[in-house]
Amino acid sequence: MKKPWLAPLLSALFFGLFVGVWYLATSAGAPAAAAPAMDPEYAALMGTQAQAGGQSAMPGPGEVAAKIWEHLSDPFYDRGTNDKGLGIQIAYSIARVLAGYLLAALVAIPLGFVIGMSPLVYKALDPFIQILKPISPLAWMPLALYTIKDSGISAIFVIFICSLWPMLVNTAFGVASVRREWLNVARTLEVSPLHKAFQVILPAAAPTILTGMRISIGIAWLVIVAAEMLVGGTGIGYFVWNEWNNLSITNIITAILLIGLVGMLLDHLLAWVARAISWRE
Amino acid sequence: MNALPSPDRLPVSAPPRQAPADPAVNKSPYSMSSQPFLKVEGLKRQFAQPGNPDPAPVFEDVHFGIERGQFVCVLGHSGCGKTTILNILAGLDEATAGHVIMDGREVRGPSLDRGVVFQGHALMPWLSALKNVEFAVRSRHPDWSAKQVREHAVKYLELVHLGHALDKKPAELSGGMKQRVGIARAFSIEPKMLLLDEPFGALDALTRGSIQDELIGIVEATQQTVFMITHDVDEAILLADRIVLMTNGPRAKIAEIVVNPLARPRVRETLHQQPAFYTLRNHLVDFLVKRSREFQPGPGWDAKNPPLVHPGQSSQPA
Image 1 (cartoon, one colour):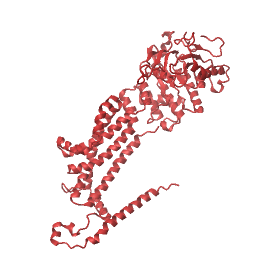
Image 2: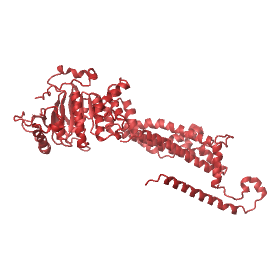
Image 3: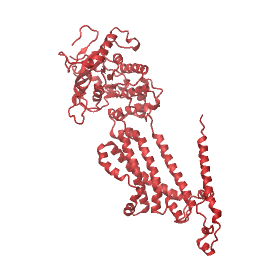
Image 4: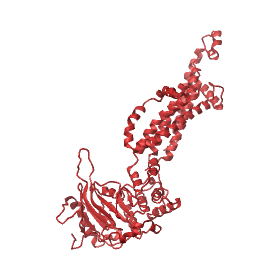
């Protein structure tokens, strides 16, 4: 017997359990921390934070929920360089990811096509790919900053370089493993090379290419946070780092949740495209 | 001595709209009468192996001819190079030696003149049945409008009784239906010759029977010249005018070419009641189980002119 509601129920249960533990862990320290008396002058210097005494900066679930609500109700405010709405920050990150990612697709898919079609080109380029692929995209950052000189474009370059490899390798693999018999059909029908590429090879390899694109968008979204922490200025990565400097754990947790949510949406978007173009034998 | 054309199966190019599209069809009166429509001469195929520059050829010294409108089956065991011969005829593979001449021109590379039905149906799984056929029609007639292409494709799908499944993807079709789409695709380009590579090998007996009937119908309607590979004796008897018998590989040869004496139209249900049926069948089975293995070229045997055999007739021409 199927119980479709069982899994969501269990999810809700786990969530409740997690929030409960979190609540207990953060509320336990509070009464003890209230004890030590505070020098009023020191308190004046340190501001409101210190009036709570030595209380942990780790917020409880209630505070985080309130913060999330606060961000959600006004996501696009802009009060200067270091105080922009979460919506603006995430929009910057998404824009950077999409720019780098689309550029990478523009390079990787045609190049992967050529590599997949020609064993010679594959062999010639393979050593380069092998060496370049495992390099952490952030290792390129200093080089990018030095040569490009613009931190925003450098971040896009880092996204470009990290999205490139999975798409390149998957496209080449997908193109190289198009079934011989379909190519033979195209040959006996005297299909022109261009038609063959777009009407036989591309649809045949599309599911493999999409798998590469899905891996790439995942990596790109992982990397953008780190890249923005380095280049600063705008973006969700910069926001997280800035809030670390402000020691606002509540904001950090909110941002973390948002990063996860957007990553999931990007992945689902590509999964949806992949389903649309996939075929079954 | 050359095989005579079977009595007047001259092409009338049945799809009537298409008659003028192929001038070669009508020039048979002045094409050299001594030359068959398709001529295979001295064909040999070696597959290079690492460390062995001169391996035994799969087949060698293969000569035969096919007349226009003839249905020729090749019968032989796996490994005798039947599929390789078909691929060479299709232009998908190249012979190590020898050549193939079709309609006065040497076969070099694949061409729309020769339609191929592949062993696995080779349909593109991302296209519907109709789109698969349309893909072929469009490459044959790049200048046609979308409507023309569609009508032409639908016509051929209806010929194989798939008018109800036009928009189904191959994954939604049964094995037999897939192969019928493959047949419709090959016929839809109206090639000068059709090559079928064990098209029914993967089908169950019942499905195979009904598709064979469809094939007979469509071949009779189009007067198509057909070269078909099979290892099914009954299939060869039902379909073929000539049955080419190949010995076992390596170094496979054409042992003989059997003339099918059974009258057309042939109907599966009553075929075995024709007196010549069992003589022919026994002859073929006997070849497959025994002589294909033991065949030794006798003194009268000439690779360039494999003997034409008429099973059941007392005086067998050498």
